[in-house]
Image (tube, rainbow, N blue to C red; front, side):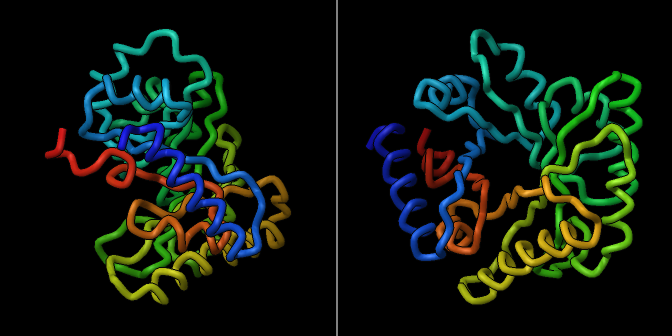
Length: 229
């Protein structure tokens, strides 16, 4: 099955999942192109995908030198961002989808201020409570609220990575928690335009869409495992 056919099948599953969940908003598909060659980014774009996700600054820097004639393609940074790589990240990416602390939010805002720009971001929330994961905890409302005081970031929404488990109810609970936290933040801090919920990857995107995801980050389900290329 070619990429366009695979994409059509995924979009059909997304539509069915939205019907089951009672949602009808657009769901953006982010192609996770990390560890894949630049030629795959071109193939994605030619297939109608206009958002890609990368998680390594050095790898992205090498790939992005090849960009040419891809208007409207959004480059999203989806990995853990080290403080010393913020400036380079702002040069390479259009959004940062993994702001996991108030300290990092401030660092990004200050760097964007020097560049006289405002950068769209998502706040990463650790909804599973797993110690190996980055992100704000759901009860860190005050710290999350302080991020909205930073003048040169625009917080479009929240992001989470579902728990590493085959227990679908635990996965679902993680996504419900993110949606409820977004609604709480919107109410508590008067942020009606913070709508995005980036949740769901290759193994759990249908559950995420059933619970209101607006963005899914897909790699393996789109391209197969890396060793197949």
